[in-house]
Every structure is written in structure tokens, then in C-alpha cells.
Length: 307
Image 1 (cartoon, rainbow, N blue to C red):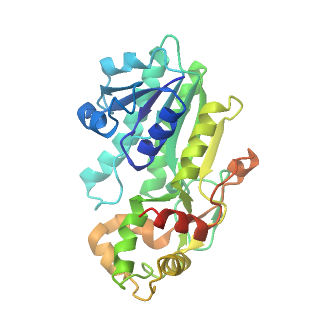
Image 2: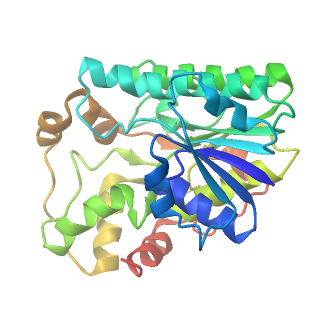
């Protein structure tokens, strides 16, 4: 198959490219920096990979590259783990809403068309809560990230108007040898680790390998269509996460990070970490998807053994 990917040089996308490459697939990376992509994925190791320059929020010649692709995987989006100034919030929204709009526009013009679009979203769709439980049928929330996810998914759904199968995966917090976990481990190793805020907030996580495998299932199973939570079936509260991480790396979890400190650093964006949400992957499990890491401790043991 020939697969087009946005966000391919990121934490999730890079592992996805590795697995597709091992399967012998032809890979088209749409990227703002083709030279960086070629350094990350050298030709000697990725002989079928091509990197094409694109601007996520603009139409352009790059869109013609979608013709002849069997599938498109859209993972692009500006990071949310920075202070949310008004301009930053607009960038977060545009990178997802307009970025997806331009991908769908390219698919609509393609001849022949891809058969499937795998589009990222996030569990921020549900809003935050310390008490509620959410699954794929739960209504959307009302805060900034929930509104971003609604607009993001609405653009993706337009691909169905041109007869292309759509799989939306709402990503939870992805654990691997990078991302959020890489920021948490150094304080623990210095005996300064502990829960953030109250510790009571829910932490809906997924091992990176499971998320990548879920994306591949969406790509390879023609009967898979709709919206799926990319989370493990056993979410935990923040204090349980930190306690388990401390056990795995043999360090105490005793020094909480005050919520106020995070609010000073991230402003409105701190809400995502301080409030959280309990998200269950009911639709994902109903497909028969097999998690390699359904529970937290084995996931952390596997990841930290490589760090």
C-alpha cells in the first residue's frame, strides 16, 4: 500500500512510520520540513519513503500527491502543552480544523482516491471531570479543547461525502519513551517526584505501541469505521500513576506539584492536567482490538526498561 501521513516526525507518527516501513509499505510524508524528515528516516533504512513539503493550513501543489494513495493518516496539530495565549489558541485550532479541511479537500480532488482516512482527535472532546465516566457515545464538553475537537472532527467527517471510509481516534495521554512520561521521570529519579495538583484527577492513558497498533487496525480493516477512544481500558487517578511509576523505578512519590504552580506556567492550559477525565474505550474493545498493555504497571515497566 501507499500511505500518506501528516505528523510523521512526532512522538506517535515516527513509531507508526517505523512499523509501516517494516511491513514494506510505501510511505508519503507530508511535512513542513522535508530535510528534517529525511534525517529522521534516512533512505538506506526507509527505501520507499518520500517526504513532500506542505503547509497544513493552506491549499497547494502538495494536495496532488494524495492521488494514488491507498490511505491517509492525519496526525498533525500544534502542541497544547504551552501557555494558551489568544494567538496560541488560534494556532491550536487552525492546525487541526484548517489542517484537516485541507487534507479532506485533497482527498476529494484525488483520482484515484484513498479508501480510508484515519484522523486523530483527543479525549479533550469530553471536557474534564473528576466524577463522570466517558465513552465514545458521551456528549462533548464545553471548554476550549472540547470545542477544538468538535470542529476538528466535523472537518474529518466531510470525507464521507466523497465515499471515503473514516476512522476517528480520540487519543488519550500517550505513554512511551518520550512525551509526557519523559518529563515526569527525571524529577522521580532525583527523589522529587509526586502527583500534580490534588492527585484525584483521572489519567486516561495508552501505551504508544497500542495506539499505533490501533491506527494500523483502522487502516487495514475495511469494516472498521466510526469514532474510537485511543485509551487503555484501565484509567487511573494521578496519585496512582505516580505511586506506580515510583514503584517501577524504585523511587518515592512524595512531593506533590501544587496546582497553582502549573497554572502559573500554563495558564488556562493547566486545566487539562489538573482536572482530567475518566475515558473508557468501549467501542474500541467492541471491535475485538487486543491491547498489549491494558494495565498501567506492565506498561511502565516496559517503557522504563528502555529509558
